[in-house]
Length: 101
Image (cartoon, rainbow, N blue to C red):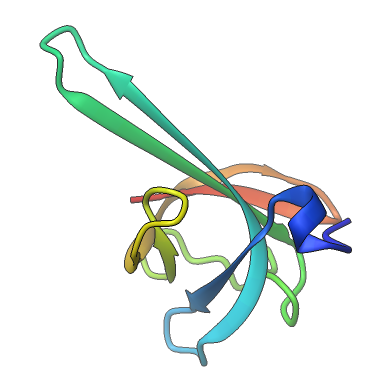
């Protein structure tokens, strides 16, 4: 999986592990927006990365609230550093999924 980022809609992002060296990885990004009852826009950005310490982010190094990732809030927008937040949303031997804000 993640063989061809163009086919799967993958994006190159920079991952900044807390206390580690930044690296560029390919991830899948799902961006969603919601409106609350008052009409305020809320966003939810979910990232799926390889569960791998070289080509992705391994479960062993994942640090919620400490790691950051540089990516655009909107596809094609300007990339900015966002904090990885919360517990892993899902994980298996091949991938991990988490939120950024």
